[in-house]
Each structure stands twice: as structure tokens, then as C-alpha cells.
Length: 148
Image (cartoon, rainbow, N blue to C red; front, side, top):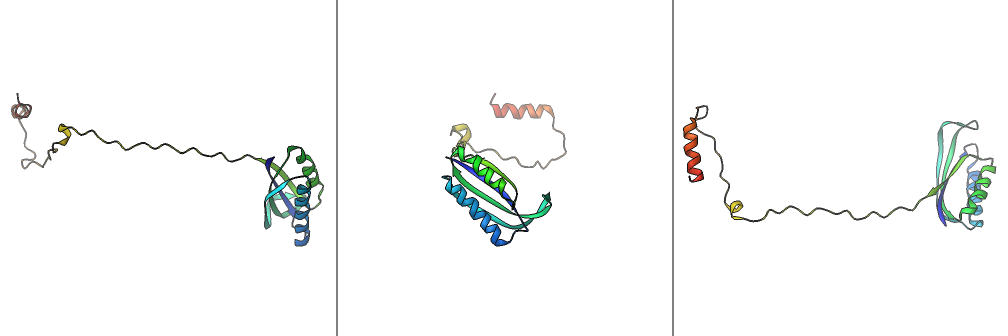
């Protein structure tokens, strides 16, 4: 059995008893055809985006049910025969897929080595800011650092 969703609009000119009666008739018709009602939801009178059969407002009813595929045609015909129903459609509800658990990346841990274990020298601002440094002095400092 597949899941279906029947959405229909009942004319707002119908009284609340007539509306409830129409909903009950459709639900019992579906159950009579071997269907199982999963959810029934109705709204108060709402203004339609455009007039349908000269009506500007109506009650929206959403009915979720399970039934065999060969019973959909008689259900659709039954709903279309009702004079109180302005518009209707039936959707096939596909079962929700279960989402796979997403893999998360492990945090990067740097390998411990002697080069990384030594403290990183902190650079401080030079007191002689703005003075030009000669290339020869830079070469001497590099030789000291590299040990050449």
C-alpha cells in the first residue's frame, strides 16, 4: 500500500455541519475501499488567490492515507462528484529517506618533533625604526644564524 495525500477545497458557502459531513463521507468512503487514514487536517475559511467556480474563499482539507493503487480512481471520482468541493488533487507521498550519518573529519594534530618543540622566537619592534640597514650587516647576521 502506498501513501497518498488528498487536498481539497470545500466551498465557504457550506455550513460547518455540511463541511464536517462532507469530510466524514470522504473519510468513510476511503476506509470502505480498504484505505487507512493517517492524518486529517482542516483549516478555517481562507481567501483564495483567484475565484474558483465563482467562490472567493473556501475550507482547505488535507487528508493523508494509505491504500492500494487500484482504489485511487474511484476515490478521485467520488471527490469530483461532490458539489461542495471546488478543487481537489491527489499526490503520491514517497517515504522519507533515512539520511546517512555524515562523516566528520578528525582534527589535525601536528606530529611532535624537536624543530617544532623549540620555542618560536618573538619579534619585537626595532628601536631604530626607519634607519636603513646595510646588506653587509644582513649577511653577517645570516651567517651567524646558519652557522657557516
